[in-house]
Length: 374
Image (cartoon, rainbow, N blue to C red; front, side):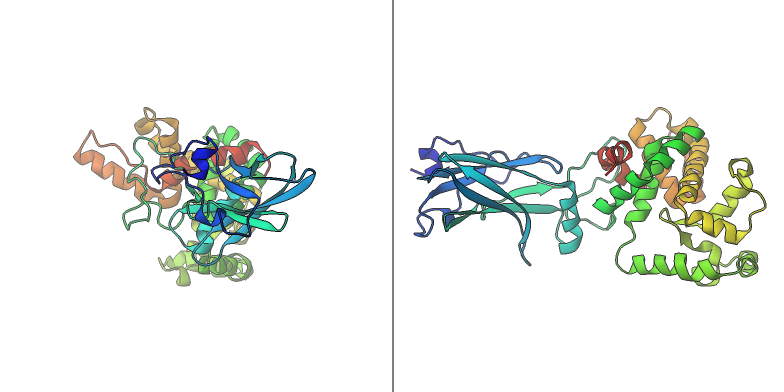
């Protein structure tokens, strides 16, 4: 009879991963005389929730302490994430660990498929076990899909997935959205556009700043464009090359990666929305690189998208409307033109939501970042 069965603890089925069994390391290994075993109370856990580990002892000493360590199991190197110290006055104990949303950042560090595995190491009176080491708690990113968000994202990614390598967003992205949440709410209300779309557009661009791209963005923002005189930028605009190396107005600036040429178009199209007049390119560069400027300009792009698409998408769910507005932010007028061309050929054609799906799939976390300071 297994130790779990003897204790009357039911086996718990794990999200299609089989039954929860006490790790063989935990029993009859001589040096672990106090332990019967330990296993997760439930495997139906999501990021941002608590995972409970139930621990059972053969014997114990009153008023002693036990330390439980939470590890992320990995082929490269297991990582200590958290620890708890318990007062032991019973042979049955429970410990709760918050599976932080920040743990999703481990996806990027290890380069693994989009799932994480957690186990606990328990130390008690010089005896220890590795609880659920061979049958760990497995968490995958919880996709919130909606009708019309195609293609669905599969793990591992295929070349056809809209996500590519920009999904999910890191915890730093949500912290940044939280920091500028007041600006997002202000401008979204002012121009009557969905705040999730504005926040999502900025988040999707900011999340792309990883690896070599981060260095390139820094060079563009703080070195190249920052020190270019206005006449040099105007000359680039006059030549109007499509290559970034030959046209400074094609560069993305600020945390929302707004092109300088886009900012100029918005400045000319909505002059009444800017506090100051007669700005040249260098003024716009400084404005884009500020949080206020980024949010203001990003909101104007979403406002423009809403004006273009409103009559075609108003029957869709709010999440899909937001996804479409974000995709326009990503692709610009070409996204709208492609849709109109298809509509001419087929009057029943409905627009796809494209890259904006990444926003609706993480909508809850974006909303939390907007509503609560992180």
